[in-house]
Image (cartoon, rainbow over the protein chains, first blue to last red):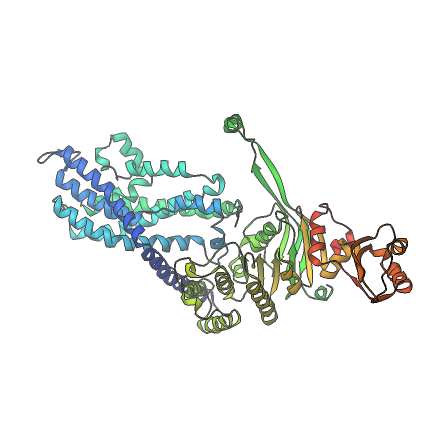
Length: 277
Length: 348
């Protein structure tokens, strides 16, 4: 078998794996549809609260940080969608996996454990859309969303921005989660990371309302490229070169996290003590 | 025990060692506060320089009390744990490098751990394993039929795992873990918590799997019936040290210095106590005594001589010399000091 044929076979095998794993993950998420629904509901609440707060700050006819009340609605609707599509909880799961030894079966499969988590994560997001999309539409109607800046070009540009953001946030957080191999208890780091996301990612408010130095700092972190950037592209607030620079920043962070992951993966798993497993 | 010497071993272990570093602190608030600034750790030697070979197709019982280092060893052999030092070669691979070609040829089944998904039918987990291990469709169908047949799974595979009893779940766990027909099988207490009938079923399945596929099997179990039924050879480990590696019968020879003599007297010819006592060496002890006969334990070196005297001088209808029960031997082994009993035992 030539190298190319071998490569093709291994891609086919990976695709076959994803098909089976994804089917199982969907069944699992639907088996616990009550819990899934509550998760989705709670993920709607946070942007909804921010939306109400910032609409009040802007007032019925005025604006705050360059946004009118109705533009805030559009902003937080997009935050809701992008947050759902980029959400990853595995940082929290790693601690449990390592403490209890639940990681063992995944490590003994002839396939990298990250594929299990990608599939699990995607299935949750796809199911989540069933609740998120109707919620976004209802919020848009009730709070009179202003998508005036969005053009078909921006919608097209939004698709890669969203896909890169999904990959970026997944790989950054999954790599960071490996800290659990050394520290075991990583909840504190996770909390810090989530708070940074809230403020520097644009989940709490558009970055434009933040002080200038925070905005500059944020640009050198992965946070705004995971949430704020795709949201701003969709709303038509970024164009031309800005969009290309954004894609570049996203790809750079994916590359950095990927390289760190490759470098530390073997070292991390050599720390695994498989307690009780 | 010598028949596997002429083939290349499937598993080679040399000077394998695993030391865990564990945090240590005393109870109480003061110790807790002190540990904030100054952490004390302690090294625990779970496995100390053990070496052995296992031949292709061999079933080996891996015995030791709780905390002896059995599971740690199996975790290193399967590739979950990196050792502190030492070398392991399994089918030409170093397990902890977790080469996919290695992982596709081995299975680690732990009686206390689930690998099947709890909330979905068993068959769905099997399908996933088919994709994970890249099992071709025709092989998968054939093996599934065989495993369902051997383990008498019937309709169980269509039920969600949470609806199965412990024994049913274990059978499904085993089937799921073996769909890729591993050449190396590590079984860590596969019959734990199961009823006697289910234990027997799993035992006969392991024997059948070994016979049909020629897989090498390492088995840990606290049920000596498992070991007696399946393993010609046992490796005993205690406090991380290899105590014995050899055949099952040799274990009794090595660790049980006494034999049991069971004597039945001719009917209506009771033997007075004083006559009996006069014959017995000081080291012999009477386990039970009645007019019909007696049971006594004697040092091995005295057994033949005493049996001869008993036969010659007493009205004996029947006399049996027995090795102590395996359970008893193993109990003695576990109570022994953690050092190799003899070089011969370890290198046997």
